[in-house]
Structures are given as C-alpha cells and as structure tokens.
Image (tube, rainbow, N blue to C red; front, top):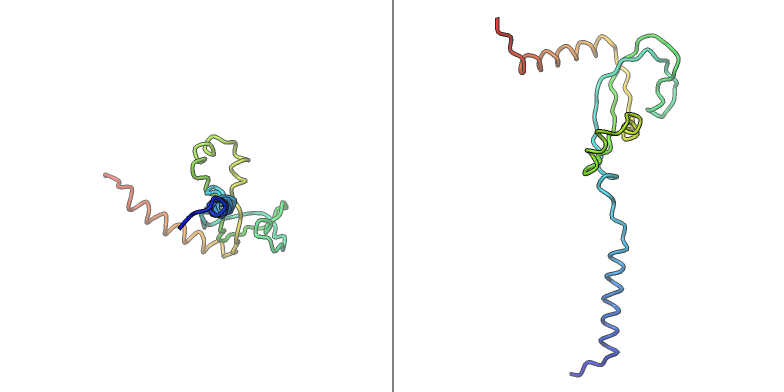
Length: 129
C-alpha cells in the first residue's frame, strides 16, 4: 500500500485541527472556581432593608439588636494566597460574598456561642490550680 503525500497531509491536517480545538477550549482557573463556604453567627444594630439580596439584608441606619447566622463564600486564591495575606483589607473583602442571612433570637445565638466556647476552652485550655 502506497501512501500518497496528499493523504499524509490530510491526516496531519486533521490531527492538527483536533489539537487546536482541544487547546482552544477554556480551562477554568483554579483561583476563580474554588470557593469555601463559611457559616458564623452575627450580631448587628443595623436596620433591615427588606432586600432579597443577602449582602444588602441590613442597611446603615441604627436599630434594635438583631442576631443570626450568616453564610459567606470565600474565593480560594490557591497559589496567590500569600499575596492576599499582605493585600490591603479592602482587597481581601472583595473575595467574600454573603450567600445567606438567617435571623435568629439573640439569646439563642449567645447560648450556642457559650456552649461551643466552653467545649473549645475545655479541650484546649487546662488550668493548673
């Protein structure tokens, strides 16, 4: 069987086309796709806005004490993490997104904090008297 130069060129062209298509596919950057979700209690003296956007749940006006649980997503910078450690605070805050705000009774939040603080304190701190 004889291989003609045109057949060889056609096969090479097909291989190159496939390679170019694979290389051209966008690959998501690690720093842009990995998120860590954190949940923590909050207390505020700010007014409710009634907004559907969790990031705008509270406004700038003073109000009575409110408390609850807040879920925040933090963008993982991966290899850029050491740079984020020395970045100004306003840049680091851009890596956070409020995803959910659940208002709860302030006394219940304080009770839960007291229990978890006691557990942590008891397991990691020993007082020699």
